[in-house]
Image 1 (tube, helix red, strand yellow):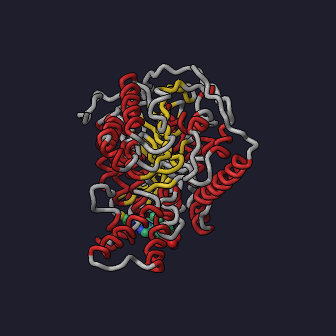
Image 2 (cartoon, protein in one colour; image 1 turned 135 degrees about the horizontal axis):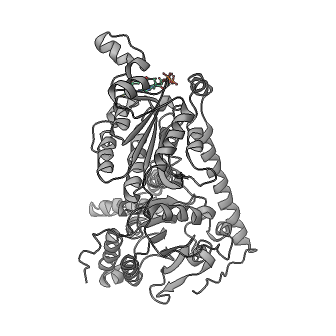
Image 3 (cartoon, protein in one colour; image 1 turned 135 degrees about the vertical axis):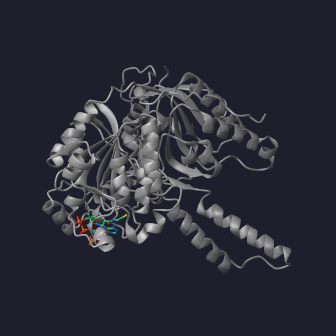
Length: 538
Ligand code: COA
């Protein structure tokens, strides 16, 4: 296979400037991740120790096979929301390896408001279940939760995608044969009681674990009955009397050990065969991506330079290299897995859209997973292009992306604007996973453009009424808040806080994350039986 020959001059002032800017962004990301992992109050730490419970990270560390990677999902969910300290939305979720099998874990963090579920916690739970279902990954719940975060109950409970959906999904996962194992490692109160109840197998920790529909305070208030948590729903009650729980664990360590034995007992995963080959590193250091990607999204660069630092041996068979040059398409391997890559090299024109459509069909037909490297301001606009059928050609690409059934993975490596987001497999187009780089921006359009549109609309309105255009001062006053909002809300951190993505990645680690995600995705059949496309407008 041909090799991408890099033209990057790693000693140029531009490269060095870019490198420093991205390095600073990655360092900021690491600080954010560290805060999300470790910022807990002394009170919460002391309470956990008093109860003889382990912190959630220790539970995970002992659950997962030693020296295996953990692909954490949405570690910065809910960043800056609520009181600013509901890190990760109060849940640690991620894909890891237990007894040699890939699983997904969903664990409450009892040091964040007693593990209670915030609205973003519900969203994270649903996302975890969606990943389990799409990739057929056994799901392990480590429950330690006071149930709904009551001050926000109206945002958690009533709607279709609220808390009730978690238990609905558990029934669906069960029906589809996705194993669900639950460790009761603290309270499972009210709604949270249904998590063990709806799981296949339940391990219950003596003394600290309890399951009940109404906790002791509610029972006291409703019936006047005085009862301890252990008497009401402890391990003895549920393992000996009610049959809600299946295994009694002496403590956290024993619970983890039992869960590992249950996972070992599951039938072996039948992974889809994609025709892997031996993995080899790229010819160029992935950290050089820092120097290639400009700090400003408006500066162009060749996405092949990024691909060269992401794929095995920097080998890339480019498809239609001379046609539709604003989209680079081609075949490569990532950690031994074959992939079809689509990377933006400018706005999408009719030719680049048609090329994408053909390429997606080829990969889908051959069972080759798709990787989208998204850096796109949108499809080309203007009279000439409308007459040339850009909307019709863009539609073909969007149609193919939406209905391709091979696993799709999206990394937003720069801009993600307008319909370009759709054509390049944004969240609504069902990628198995979607990540952002720290420099990425997302929105209908950039702030400057949005402000320009609003000012033009206003001036047209004034002209219709026979008035003169907006004075300079008013233009500034309209523009500033629009630009500020677009910058804040289009930012990668805002996106990840809202879980529009699965996390922000260090560009240098993207190749490894893609490798883990590809491996996880192969637990499900490679292509759905529903292979096929709708009508392509010709
Ligand atoms: N909603 C909002 N906040 C809650 C909460 C809930 N359901 N349950 C607990 N909290 C808060 C507490 O106010 C406390 O906040 P603080 O740190 O600001 O003081 C924090 O979570 C920890 O609670 P605490 O009771 O001190 O810790 P604990 O480890 O002894 O017990 C629980 C934790 C969750 C087991 C216990 O608080 C409890 O039983 N909560 C009520 C559960 C319930 O009935 N939920 C019904 C929901 S449907």
